[in-house]
Length: 440
Image 1 (tube, rainbow, N blue to C red):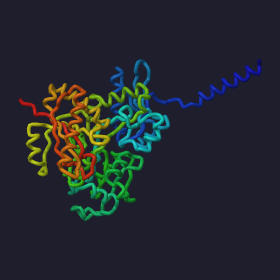
Image 2 (tube, one colour; image 1 turned 180 degrees about the vertical axis):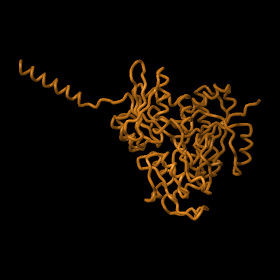
Image 3 (cartoon, rainbow, N blue to C red; image 1 turned 60 degrees about the horizontal axis):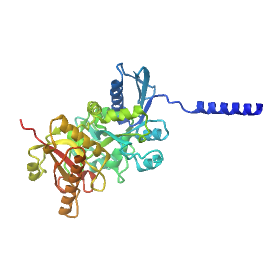
Image 4 (spheres, helix red, strand yellow; image 1 turned 60 degrees about the vertical axis):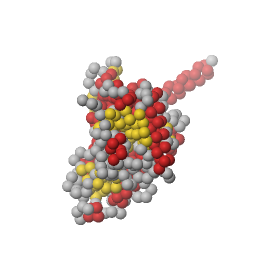
């Protein structure tokens, strides 16, 4: 009997020791990843969410580590603290995979290799796991005195790979070009590498690398020979260039061009969660971020909100007269419907944008009769084929809106005309949303 007692005591001791060895969560919620999101936007969203749950103050302090913040408040007489660690998008995935993060903040889409690595726990590509919290545009920055005002993505690639080394080659002064780039852990860098450098170019080894968007922008604004890139919220005192892709017109990043993702260097900012296995605090924060109050904070932070607004676009000389007539009595909503697979399957952002369009109509006292959907296609082998594809896209959005109660919206297709990207760009395949100009 004594032997059994000693054995049970030993097992109990081992069990307690194993419990003590488990990592104890230091914070109620941890958000790891993108500096673009974590520098200001994520803390603003956390603060806004906590303010809704408490009548007290929300405090903010550092951890002693650069690019980390702790937001805290008393909720139901209990301290609720949230860590935001902003060391780059790739670090966020690693933290989520290791169980150290509840939310992964990323300024790039999840990579296929990361999807596979995480698949046993959740599918990070589903609506339950992938949350577009804001739209950003990669701003290409130069010194305010630089006379260059626009360039193509191809020219950008040659500059940052060192093939173009002097501003005089671009119509500027005879001055060597100094390169400023984000570091390898940054989602901003991943986006620039994918959209600009691709497989054709490699970043010049003389480029200065930065963990912080703000610091990079500040340094470019002090260097007449400098050129760099950052998130749209970090333009600060630098000058922003208009960017073109293929034969499409050059566009500057602004409310409409970035929100609609027509701007060639526009990108989505994400929060990823492990499906429905996230704690209630994380789920509540995601719902807040995606809602109207959260999106208002997105706009306040300098990024582009997904809450639709109506604007009158400025057409350039390339806009066909038939399109001017078609939209003459309309304004454009700052939302485009885009597709994930094939030609008619809406992506995760589009599925949420359906609700946003519905809410816009309710808030402004408008109806489905005020809307017009215009579909577009990429260049096809035959003009008639492109027309058919563009109409099918618009019809698929119409049918999806029907399910939200926004019924029988007028629609049309505009074929392969008015591309916003180069030939083959998925951004060309889109459905724009137009709304009749109110009569006063």
